[in-house]
Length: 380
Image (cartoon, rainbow, N blue to C red; front, side, top):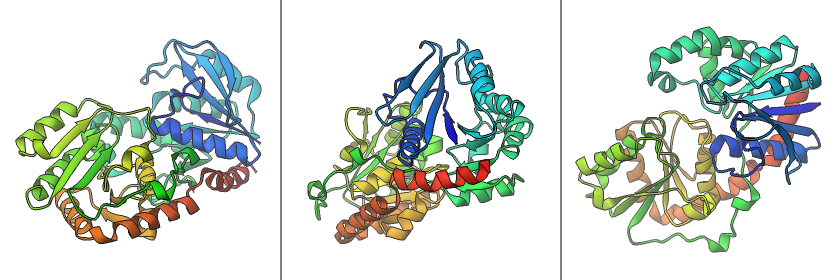
């Protein structure tokens, strides 16, 4: 069986793997190759030539020229359409990565036309929160395009089985594959390099894109403001600006916590796990979240976590005991932070428990081996 993974913006030469979805596709492709199967990543670009590239990990990248390669365009590269027609059949399987993405929908129609089975991997849950922002256009897109695409898929690949139940509530009963994200061995540092200070200012940390609504950073600031004057804490927020940095800084000013909150530019030269090691408590209070690779990297760094209940990594945090799970609400985040701060003497044991649990259960090779068996069953 040949497996194809489509991610429109995947880098043609397999570099620049910092963005979350790109990193996830790379990890799964690498794991599938290590499981003994042939894997090709399909992407499109308006700047690269149509070409193939064999990565060091063993999977192939085929990039197709698309002069309409904007994220909102429904136009699929004619080269990619020709490739599907000539080289894919009903023994192939294509994993379409993305949600509410016009090219994912368009490619699904082309695959259906040629009898090629496909799986949709949305990378985020179809939760009520995701429909709340830009509600009207999303609902139109959902009822006329997205829902039908999901219903006609061989399966929907979610990052947590609970996200499959959300689809059932939306009357999508397509088979569900629960396949979590994994980690890269290069993000694992020796245990002897880790430290857990028992005194001094407690360092809270958020790492990710500055998308206030999705990531719940506005909620985190409100909750932090309520404990900043009663707890010896500092909050650092780091990541690329998705348009909300100024409003978040203004919010910190309004809350009178600017001396206790720092905003840092992203650092793509360092592994996230290495960056996270400098802090004590990792916070991911998202209103909606597929899995959170950053939270996984925090577990590998031996940190304690505050995670919102929608995130796919929640079962691993709960089973290992390395943090607290909260609702994406200011009061719940506040109580979660206080609970963690009171357990400071336990941070080392909690952090190591989370690290060891992640090392055991979230290796990409192990995840991909399980996924491959499920893909083979679907094709049969």
